[in-house]
Image 1 (tube, rainbow, N blue to C red):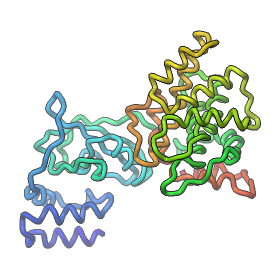
Image 2: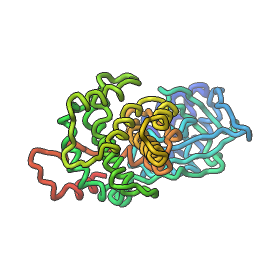
Image 3: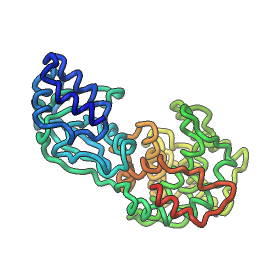
Image 4: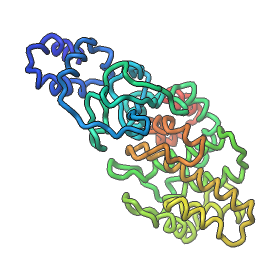
Length: 359
């Protein structure tokens, strides 16, 4: 691919000026992490011949807010030329183009935007002149480097192994390319929930952990399609009761089970509706309702974090502070073979080391 850059730079003055940007863009989109390989004079010439483009809507300060997902091979934001106007697209890049490290935000004057490609398909990409972005800062997210990944996951592994191998008995199938709510989704939500419990900065009890595990394993038991389905929570609760699902080794008292089933029933409904259901549920004390609300928000966040698998997560909509630190970790889990951990040989001695090496 470097030969494409070399060849273009050698012959660009022979290309009709009105075609220069189009040809450069075709090469640019084929090569990952090539920002540093373009000579500054090349970019100046190409950008000077770029056609007029529509510009993103600026904020109140007259500047456009832009985002950039970064991995271990990424160009630093000061000199990077590829950004996006949507943070979800930036997160997708961080999670899928390299081991994610940061999600950067910055601002830029409209005059320094060379090209804008709006829309989901085009990733809302913004191409900017180098060294023109301003006010660079970073979202408070855990990087998916090996040290951080191991630190977050190791405390969760024993219970992940204990409870995760039971997921298949509740009817979940392994996903295909068009099926994304199956066994792997359940296991990732379980691991994220356990990561949350063991690393959070708020006090949660053993009973709270039990509710998180129960939710993770059973929240999609009644889902029968891949579309938006506001009723699959209620269907899951109905199936849990009809089939008397039991999670071996998980002790929940009657109140905790009621809370867990209430969370499952409303996890796919609007937050306001779920919170209203909690606060109008008969038999709960004020303390019970506050506890149930917190666990409801955590469960919705853990389920929501796995939307990174289809570029469907707007992390700004996550409800809890700790969950908003986990999107890059959630993306890293997509690269883990969570099913292999539960292989037929059940030799788990090296599991933690394997996860650390792969993560």
